[in-house]
Image 1 (tube, rainbow, N blue to C red):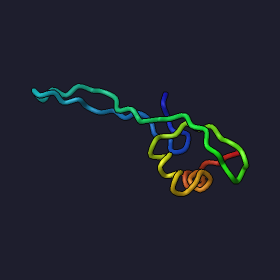
Image 2 (cartoon, rainbow, N blue to C red):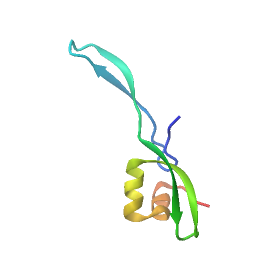
Image 3 (cartoon, rainbow, N blue to C red):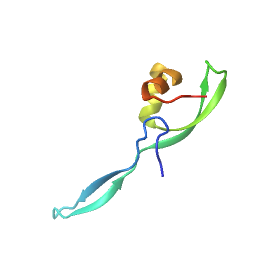
Image 4 (spheres, rainbow, N blue to C red):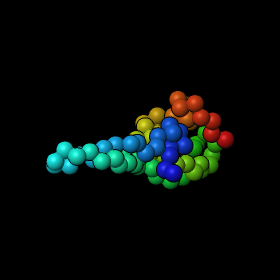
Length: 75
């Protein structure tokens, strides 16, 4: 299953509504990407499955700070 390593975001249950207002169940999938990120504090790459919103936040504050915010330890 596509799930973010940091935030745990995964697919959500939704409804498709037709023109005649018939509601049928469907899934909304999150945009999960597998990325190798350079962590300067460790001096190495770390492979993670992240959503695109996670990647944008990591660009702003950094990998270690985002991991600390989400309560995850990188080792």
